[in-house]
Image 1 (cartoon, rainbow, N blue to C red):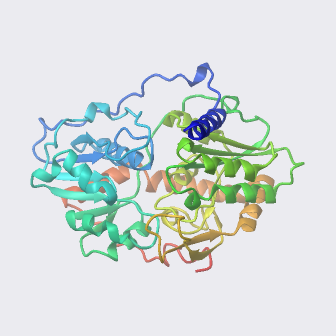
Image 2 (cartoon, rainbow, N blue to C red; image 1 turned 90 degrees about the vertical axis):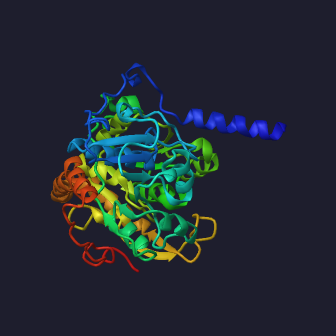
Image 3 (cartoon, one colour; image 1 turned 180 degrees about the vertical axis):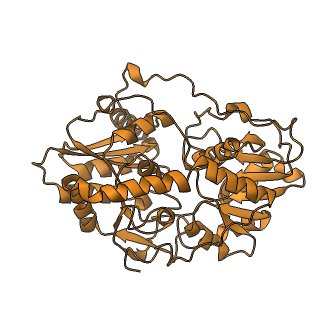
Length: 428
């Protein structure tokens, strides 16, 4: 009992030490709610119920809010139901509060943003399973094959939408039901106004940013490789560069934080911060970084990469998996990789699966390139910003999703993996 208590205290002190130091500028007013769409009582039947982690400050919560905001942006009627089934994450986002409704919703179609492992529980908790409705699931997955344990949920839905063709390929392999890609919509969030100093960042250094959630697999996100690449790229006597590794929910995996601190060693240029921060603060942080790095082994989407590309930041990332829907050799700095078996215990449902092992030395070379020759990547950065602003806009995704829900406009057939560049940036 005493040993457990002491361990908890050590972990609490560690997490407290790694939080951002909050000054007066960190206080924020409530986020302005999105504009209101026609309510269910005003609607004539056209519209959709959305069930998801609408207050959740984590990936699935962001996805539910993003697609909801996209529908709102094109005036599509929605009725939102918040789910808190099996969520260990923070639930502090209130941006869609005016749209939240009790009960099961007024419309014949329900769009569900709860992954298959908790799908039935979430549906039952909100009463959706008790009434006939068209059920469309929006799901995410990070490996080439959908887990066998998810098959039951697949049979329980009528259709599936996904954010990337990487995820679509995985689901199409296990079902004949329609699987349709709707590009992920990037939400508009005004940065909070925090300056570099508020995040503990120097004004006169080139700052690399790496972000991840400890509730996701740390092995999959692979932040240790980013630290290794940074140290390989820049000898310790070079003081004009900084790497900020920003995690969240480290209290759930304190050993991962300790391992990252060990990777960083005594290199004061490498900053590790673990904190759940408001999306407006996150946007400010992304704006103050000079480049973003993700040496992931697998991604269903890769939201941080897309967000930083939209902000005009060079993005260095493993050239494999979901991020290849919006990244290519013309708009990003893609890191070579080798496909390797996922080791036992590294990721759930991963037996017999593969993911990418990024080339750390190649990543180091690319990190040197963006610091020492920014003009050499300027065209790619500008192209990335244009492509993301168009391809992942709220209005475009909202129009596509509205047309899909109404069944009025057929979407273009998906590109092949070769056309998307999935086999061109590494060694299969």
